[in-house]
Image 1 (cartoon, helix red, strand yellow):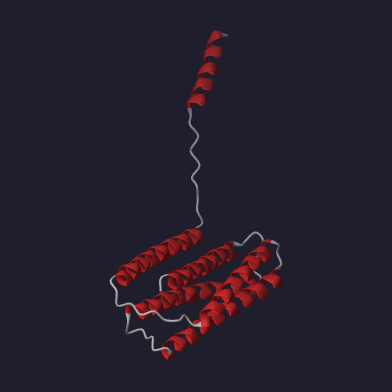
Image 2 (spheres, rainbow, N blue to C red; image 1 turned 30 degrees about the vertical axis):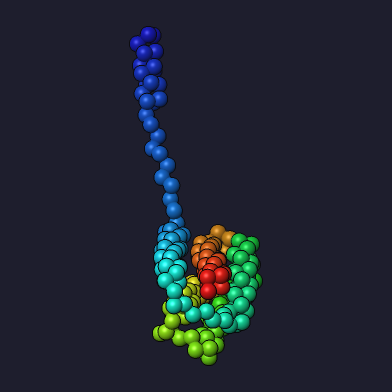
Length: 203
């Protein structure tokens, strides 16, 4: 009787001594790539704005009037961020038709923003501000141009989201693409507002 008890006790002790494997936290690869993309852009513009301030402090800096079209384009981009947020909500509610409409509107607003930026460049040239010239103008073109280049990537993600919604492959259980699209688009919106305020303040 005691031998049987000892055996059971040994089994119980052995069972207690076994450690369960720790759970591994998994991160969606697309979300990881998106945040890596964001961190890279932040580092890029942090270095560029630092270079801007250093060069401005050296003097020989020409001040110019920022064309009104840049103010309007900023408003357009902010509105597009709102429609992108509504797109994500629509995806989570399985409102596919609404999702397609809102993503399409966001895309149109993004393209409108790009068109306005180009018109803004033309207005700058009418003032005699060119890419090759005084550093103040050069930096303005570089900042806006880099942002436009990254916005094109955001537009590519938007178009991919629209196509997926059009093929009925997005629903409340599969919103990763819409989430990635919303995160990157909101970031590009915030980035532009930051750059625009920076360029206005440090003219």
